[in-house]
Image (tube, rainbow, N blue to C red; front, top):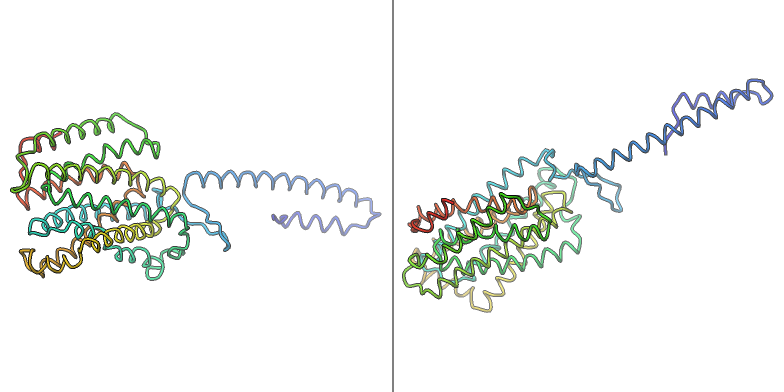
Length: 387
């Protein structure tokens, strides 16, 4: 409720103080009435202007008002490019994505190259690093004191259910990736995973109404042709002892992993439209990784995976138990960095931009496979990457 200005208040007092029978009392009363009417009109105009300003601020997504039983509090939308933390978060998450994508790909292949054979172990390590997410969730509030929002304070049952379902989908994606990576060279697997951008564009159009441009369509055509050429001309690229049938199992498993991950990206973009802070993104990521880990753990338990890990480290893995457990632990950390970076990029930009960034980094994975493991990079592969 608005208060009258101090001058208007004095005029009202002086009007009331005039004697009732005074010849000036009528004049004072009429003047006060006119002033009051004028003031109300001014107040109405100011109210309309303020409502328009609030609507404009809300539409520009500079801040979000959170309604609850507590007093109304305004939170900065960290997706807004004017946010103080936007550029810092963007750089950090891209570095996480870069380091995690390259390292996890090479470490997964290192595991299989040295006679690690459990695909459930390879699946499990992709999500088992979820405890690392506790740091970006709890540090900002309890240690850094850079936010007033308590962890999980805005985490609704609907978001919880969505996070669990998407986490189970990620668990299946991780399993398909492990199957593909166990059979295919790193360079071949990376090139096949680049086809996820094709699916990403199509699903982004359907789910988040992404506009199709000539550049987007050009990427779709080139990547589709690249994958087809790679499939037709890669029989010479099979590792020794691997049958053609198993090679194509790995091929289609990798394509399936790309399809599921391409579905994951626009779904998360749609959900992130209702989320205003990076901490909440990490909270969702924590629940998703727990669900994916539960799926992988169930698979390992049913297939004797945990006892297999101990036997594998002592008997099968040719680098010894110490290197085995270092490899497993490093896989856990690097995969978590990769998923953190992916979620952050989608939150801060879009699912298509995140997909493009990951596809661009796959070139580094191909180069890493050539330099570290001596993967072949001639013929079809070279022509594919030159495109």
